[in-house]
Length: 213
Image (cartoon, rainbow, N blue to C red; front, side, top):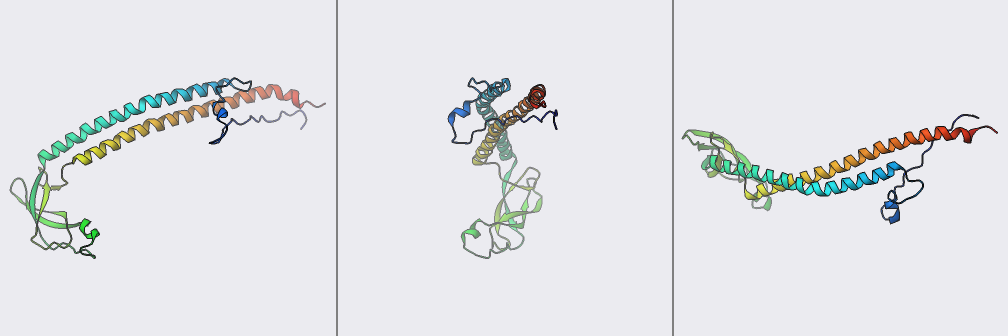
């Protein structure tokens, strides 16, 4: 309709595809009449986030790894002091593997009920994983905790190392993801601010473009 203000249509921000013109990657830093103040702000925020991540990620990785290592090393030492390796006797035959002698059979373990003596000398029973095909009354070694219950062996050096590395990597990724999230949120806020400013400017300019002759 004549005299009606057209709806504002802001131009899209340049978003060069990978492998495109390398000059477009720095368009927010170059002086040009179309560059907005928010473009410069977004460029500085992005640079600051990159530097912050580069500085914080290694520190977070080291701190998390050191804390995890101390924790798991203390846990392993406590388990070594409070757990005991004891003989146990199978109450019944262990199931046979469908393929005796195969590589899979060598790795497979079946839970079987066993009898053993607790730290206090009391006879006890429980279930532990044993090799397939073991007959009843066979003797196996089990780990028993201070309460006399069957448990896992103490943490090994390899397990401590792998868990420590796991926490260190999680800390590193956490810092990187946080940086990306902050960059995305600030970009969204600045984009909405651009739209508001564009609508305001267009509301002032559009009537002069849409007047009927």
